[in-house]
Amino acid sequence: MKYLYYPGCSLKSTGRPYDESLRAVFAALGIELTELDDWNCCGATAYASIDENQAFGLAARNLAIAEAAVTDGPPTIVAPCSACFLVLTKTQRYFEDYDHVRDGVTRELAAAGLTYRGHVKVRHPLDILIHDVGLPAIAKLVQHQMKGLHVASYYGCQVVRPFATFDDPLYPTSMDAIMRSLGAETVDWPLKTRCCGGSLSGTIKEAGLRLNQHLLVEALRKGSDLVVTCCPLCQFNLECFQKQINKNYDERISLPIMYFTQLMGLAFGIPEKELGIRRLFIDPLPVIGALKGGVPAHV
Amino acid sequence: MIGFLSTKHRNKNGSPSSGRIKKVVRRVKYESELDLGFGETIAERAYGQKLLSCIQCGTCSATCPLSYYMDFTPRRVIAMVREGFREEALNSFTIWLCASCYSCTVQCPRQIHITDVMYTLKREAIAREMFPRRYPIPILARGFFDIVHRNGRNSEGRLLLYLYLRTNILKIFQNTRLGLHLLRRGRMSVRQEKIHRKEDLRSILGAVSPTREEPRS
Image (cartoon, rainbow over all chains, first blue to last red; front, top):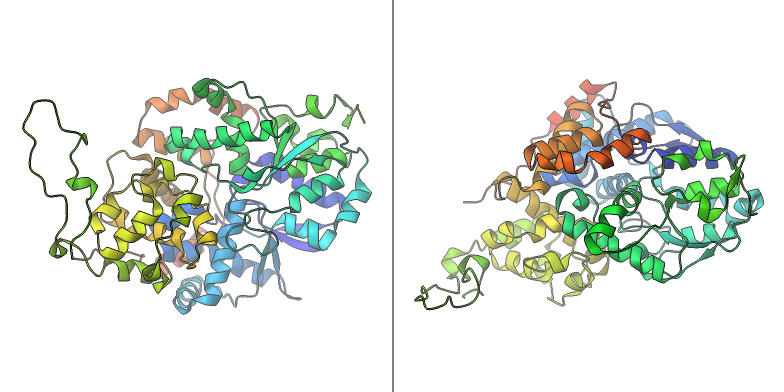
């Protein structure tokens, strides 16, 4: 299996552990990822708040590069960041559905000598893992069963809403299924797609932190040992603001928040160094088991 | 037709002040003060006349995780837009608090693209500079826009510096520890990420006239 890979800006900075662990896990599964040549920012939510025509052009440059890069069959981009995934899918969808978007994008790309015909498929790693790789192939690679570990899967909002077709927009289950194939138990957590507030934690702090407090408290009440997520901003908000949440709302929360690919990597026996575990603020290894040479000792 | 009361016409502290004579204020708007084409304009820019067929069921407000911080719930914003309460809609905090989680959009029984409505209102408010000075959300959006426009990629560290310098410089110190933790773990850098073919991007972004939400007279 071969795909084009669109990491996005976050996976080069705060989301680095996601990038590292995703590459390691996909390599272990025999999936070849080729980073998209000279990709640019998708525009996220902020760019469209200023100028929508430009925002579509910005995102479409990536689609045009992808279309030019693959000559056999329709190109598929794997976009692990939720914002990137949403913006690229939205651009693709609006390009198909609205004439004025298609005309605008075509004109913008032509100014740089690029063309786009609308053939790119934008897919999320969860979609690839469930539908292309399959759960049995994942289970086969597991060396260390995550027995007894209670995992809350946090999807966040933009990965399942509103354009994704691979899972339910309000109560998705793909990440939970992957976690169970690692031997872990998944908790029934109705807030799994409730918004973390995105950049509100940096702008309107009270609103942003409250949303995250609710998510964390509820995850603990459901008996979670740790939270796995598939979005760099969710991971950042839930993990890096735990101290401030504890201080502001008199909580005593210390809940590891990791990328689902990191837990997959640990289960596959991939050394923790290649998974960016040490880049996390809250070490998940004591919960999973003390490490010995990259292998959780309790298993 | 007359409209319902708006923030602008509401008594500032909401209750009669002690002993002082209350000022007489008009609590409704005359039709002549409304922008009657506003609903049509926003509907068109937000991908659909469906906005005009909103049944005011309130599913959007109920599902919105931020509605309890909003001055007007999403349902009321839609009603205001449709009836032409332009000033009230654009001055509302609601449009800025929307974090684009698309809960309302996927649950709306009328399939109104509510998130796109909020984006359209944000752009309109930014074009008219209808937001308080130093209000962080539009400033963050502008900073992000400028950085990406110039370099093709975002740099989270630089964006936060931009935000704090333009809103509240003290926040730089409040967030120093978090920044250091991120730096030490290799999760933040002050280096500016760039794409190679910047001239391509410049041609793309300059090719169409900006989506200026033409201020309506």
